[in-house]
Length: 70
Image (cartoon, rainbow, N blue to C red; front, top):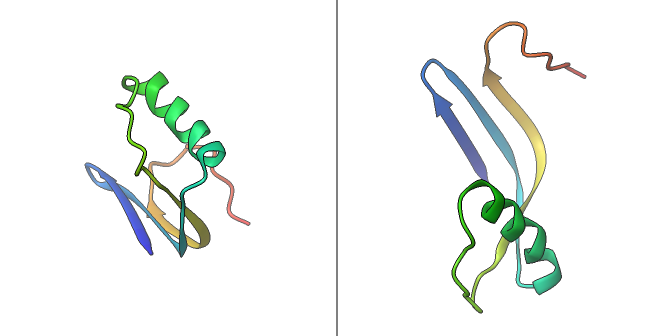
């Protein structure tokens, strides 16, 4: 799976294997983070979490972001 975020000339792409998780305990953290940033999500018993185990990250970010390359 690939996920990409673009903001103006800056971008980041994350690649990895995706896994769909239905477990309510696993869903709790992402739902809370969403609620803090936006609003409480509607109740949806069919909601799943997509976990991406990263294998590669690529991007173009502004200098001085403090990111360290391994």
